[in-house]
Amino acid sequence: MKPLNADMHCHSTVSDGLLAPADLVRRAQGNGVELLALTDHDELGGLAEARATADEVALRFIDGVEISISWGDDQTVHIVALGIDPANTALVEGLHKVRSGRDARAGRMAAELDKVGIHGAYEGALRHAGNPALVSRSHFARYIVEQGHVKDVKSVFDYWLAKGKPGYVEHSWATLEEALGWIVGAGGTAVIAHPGRYRLSKTERHELFAAFKDLGGRGIEVLSGSHKDDEVREYSRIAREFGFLASRGSDFHGPGESWIDLGKMPDLPEDLTPVWSQWL
Ligand code: AMP
Ligand code: MN
Ligand code: MN
Ligand code: MN
Image (cartoon, rainbow, N blue to C red):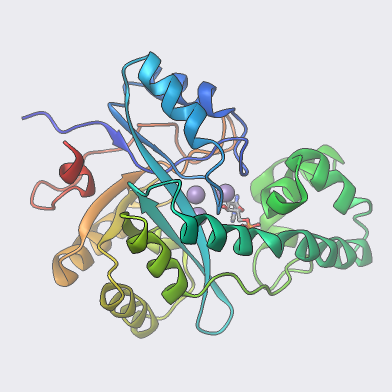
């Protein structure tokens, strides 16, 4: 049987994506996606529009969200929640709390950037984000590119915004326990997002996966827009070792700004169980 073209990870203008939820859904369908999850950062506000458009164009749709958590010694890890009930009170309130720190963090980032010659970054990033509770490093990056400091968003991260760079400030997101509690309580399936992107030792990585599993976490992104071939092999192995469901997500943010486009990924290794098999 031909594998399903599922894309379980992407962003709209409701977080740091460039397309409105409806446009994102139309683009996914145009790209041949057969099952789509919208997973904005810490925010459920795009799901209703995305689902309505998906119904219109007959694309199967899963409600999702990507939750920012802090792990260990100031590591940010992302947990993708799939199939959650967007009306679940504990989830809604929990995400509200996660978002509430973004504005103050943006102010601290702008103060650090100002010291290295990038001025007006708070106002600039806010203009891109539209909402102080949603300001992300992506919005800072777009402002800094617009100001002509460097040519693209990726370079902004390399020079100023990645951990250890002058515009990076520490921040406490949710804990792993909180995020898993909200996801499981809202009937969702928790998936570790883009495991290849965390700067963790092999031991730390295993600790994260084990703690995640203990708390009810069930899946891992084997295929991600940011994974290289050796990472796909590594996280396929981890999925087998821990008995995780396998996910496939582009992490698309917008045309010209993402590793790959919606739905444009290889198939999962055949022996792995896709996280979406429960919804078919
Ligand atoms: P924040 O949640 O504010 O820390 O912003 C994190 C977002 O920045 C991620 O969701 C990505 O969209 C983006 N991002 C992180 N690292 C990079 C990178 N190296 N290149 C481009 N975008 C990045
Ligand atoms: Mn993002
Ligand atoms: Mn992420
Ligand atoms: Mn993402």
